[in-house]
Image (cartoon, rainbow, N blue to C red; front, top):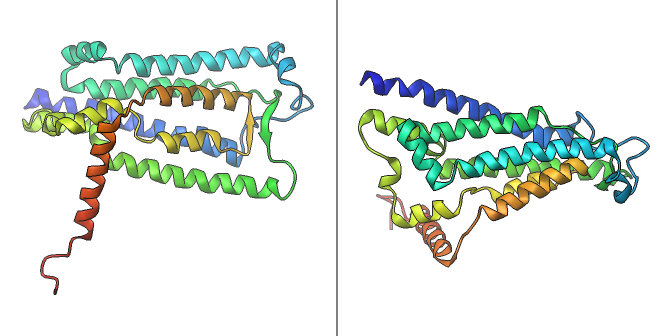
Length: 262
């Protein structure tokens, strides 16, 4: 039992790192563009043409740096999700395989956020400047971001947050209950293999719905949108399973309570 208990601090450390990274990601994607911080546009060159901007070294260099950071994150996230790599990490790290994946993903995302280079001098795709848009558009974006993050947190709880973070695997291992995924139905396992990111629509809202869309934010939104789109492979069987699960839960909610008068 003692060696098994040593796994718990490692899983908890991975969870704390991931949780802190998630909080920082909210600040990076929502609070910074909506409430201030480093501006995403501005200065005398903010309205220069896109062709001229793509020839400006002061714009291309930070964009290339940001692209490299995003490719590093996408590469890590995809490589460690490959079946061959998962089998290798499971062989050497055992029940900590998911915790290792979560920790590496959090570290890669930390690199993106800490070393991200804004491009304040480049052109913008859109920007709310004139009143009343300068007041109402940021407010609307703020409301949509709050709703999106609340939905994201709710969906993560529904999809078994403890299992996503690797905590449940260690808990089951310590108690001798086996692998949590082994208790799930084949249709649920098939759905999870196709749906790596259950919060796609909400994340896309956070990425695109901003008052000012500068070049670095456009790069971030475009690349992550492509990645999220390619990571999804739902088919009709998956959709039928989701519809059946939704109908089952709605039936449970609408069923009369025991002892209720007829």
